[in-house]
Image (cartoon, rainbow over all chains, first blue to last red; front, side, top):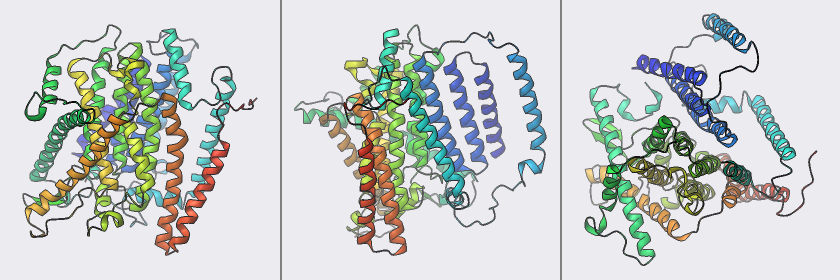
Length: 196
Length: 401
């Protein structure tokens, strides 16, 4: 049962990844990305990492790719791209880098110093007794890694503030300041409508 | 064992043919019950709204018109399916299923009844009880968003596109508020599992309505959850996704026949699922008084009464949604976004903070009459600061250079 699920999920993940690269239409590529991400979520699930799987689906497969799609639709770039390269040597460089990455992965995957000690599935880790893995992640995140957690949240806040500042600076002409977030989308939608 | 199956005692002794059969039967029952429930809900909605507007409503098909939805469904099934010339055919065909399948799957975590004996096994009347519990709802509503979004885009037509861009912005915004409202309950329950949350709200007497059920200790979360659940299901007054005077029909303008019916089904199914989740989280799920004159382990008290109480609570919430639909006018789009981003998310954060203080206070044995006002006052100060920072309408804002 588990190996069957693993191969199904792995095949879906790889097919999705190929689709992301090969699809000519950006929206199709985004959909293949969703397939890949959900496949990875299933793989997490098979590793008993249900919280990671849930977060993978909620954050990556839904929120982030929806934002991708949002941008694709708003910018109106949702038609097939021409395959001509603007940057010369881009394609051979990409292939070379891809091959290097693949070799690196294959080499690293075989070494314990890179992947850590293998653990048997279903055997609780040291310091168990916190119940399911949601509790365990929470416990570790808010005690051992609290500093890193807080630093990361500050980093994200900085990114959000920076994005707002940049948007404000370039959007001075159009959007009045009292307009809520939604009005920006409304304006963009109206612009889209006018262009169509 | 696969963790998504959760802590159901059915899986405790390993998985054999009987267990698989029980799970399959449960799946089929949930599937059928949801379909019938949608059929009933649509009829119920039309009938109640008709009563509220002094009309008769559906009355021809079946007794009291109860088969009207079925008739409509059959009609839609036999109608021609058209597809616009600019449509993107694979995505156009895929979109309805991306809407309906998560709508079905989200219901899987709802506990409909208690522990029941089936074929010598004990199992919960609930399809799945994953360790991630309520997060499953957020996962499914996140995937369901694609149905709406891609339907609009793949139609290759401008009104559906505008409708779907609107819809995805709305759903994404309110998903945040919805998730934060759920936190208000999780802080009290200490567990994500819907089964655990329901067990904590078990019936111990009439007082458990206020002492056990989470609607009172998490009243703020309850209100925020209800508002964002209504918005998340595109239910009026938040149905801007299909605001007909602005967008013709919204994201499903170009859909006809059974594909349209599938969107329709998914939408109402989401209303039912969200109501069922609200019952689970805040109103005790299947908790309710058993029939005292029967033995505690008689089949009526084991099978019927929990399902009965669950259904009663669900019907109360569904009636409330119909009532809202018949009463409130649709919001403007900027009002919708302002409500979500400027109020609900902040209030949900503050409520989570208050709940945290109250729960920790109760655990540490602090004086409740000190901690609760202190938490509320602290939240009030934060709110006041936020309020003072909010730009006022028409106020000139200095340029950032």
